[in-house]
Length: 271
Image 1 (spheres, rainbow, N blue to C red):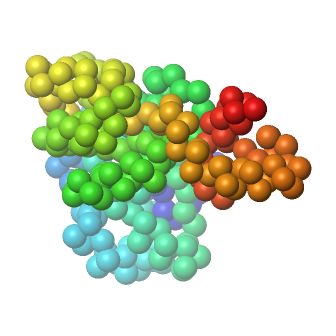
Image 2 (image 1 turned 180 degrees about the vertical axis):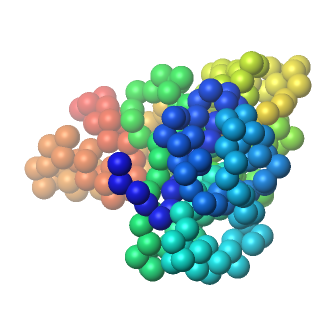
């Protein structure tokens, strides 16, 4: 198996049994493990009898660690990067480091493994492969609504904290009370919960239960085609140019980020 200088290694998001054999082998074979919080990582290492040295690497020391890691790698050391849970660089530090490593022509590889978003959406029926992941939502209500509007025709996935979930659900309800929401928490753990409800029902559900654990949310795309009426002038011009309904759907979806199936359905209904 080919050896690399730097490994990006996903770690379990809850169930320790989800780590891969390859991840264990890599963590044992490298000289250094760069981690967010050595206390969290050490629990994982102890469980699998991994004695590799850990060095802290988080958003507060990210830039200063880059030169240190490059120096160590050029001295012949192998390094693995882990986050507290899940896949590094996925709402976790690492992007700056990887960018600089590639500038130095240092070999980098990423292992497949645990990821909360993929674990979450693989349990939710969807009628399209398209989705947008935006990490954590912005703080202000206006910014959140702008984001919802931008991805109105796409399933929008984001992380949320337990203490903000109810407030976020209220924002969704104010924005569009008819929208469907899916929420996943405690994924891969004993009390895992993945539910899909209308926003109002979701609010009621979490108002009656304690909210704990890491949370992933999907705001399902709007099922209303009313917004497509805003493009009627463009549709009329394209029809005058003898474009087919299928071509018009592709053109509008490409230019304006509208779901092409929605556009096509709208065109069929308005014939």
